[in-house]
Length: 276
Ligand code: FE2
Image (cartoon, helix red, strand yellow):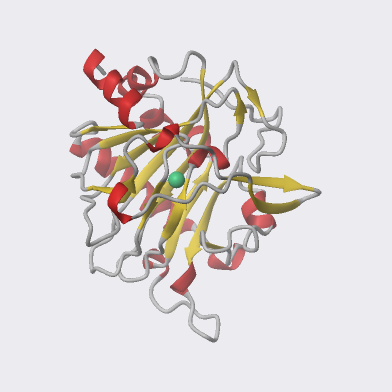
């Protein structure tokens, strides 16, 4: 990350680094994700992931996954009888949320020198708090509503940075990211918190989400890294194409900032969040 990259990140709230991950690294992650799904017994958890009403769908399986490796289904994976409409491997929305600490393959990638170098100028004391492997399955890959990742990772002062690695080409047809350039300077609109074991998405600012004219698609090729500010509004459309859109994400916060006790994702002493 050179000085120009840093300025661009400061101005726009995001940065695209094409060709960040090698084909071999990408294939290694994809193969490992497939193995995890192959070993997953759907009877363990039929939890779905959707941003349409995440608080309602935040069951114990989801809320207890901060320090686990668990699979979550696409909302449209099941038919009216509760049966999978297609094979399990084409029904999973994501794997979360501690791949980077509990799986050797994902840990090696997440803590490689390249990722560390990108994080260095953005966070003084980086802690890797959460990881997700996102499938965005063909035809049923769900929409992710416009949001700011900081809503899920509140620290004082704010410090969340998201790393989004394209493991397949992502474009408008298969649900690429859309972001609001400069939108990281707008207020935080919502916070997703846990109170008495109950998840809720609280509205804390009435600033509207960006309209269609101020949000742009980030069409990137396999291997690209998109790194963005925790307050940057972004979303992704449903994937109605025949082509999946796999991505791997990492959330990093600054260890010097106070991590909110209300954040849904908490790490206990048995598996504290670690740096690189
Ligand atoms: Fe996000």
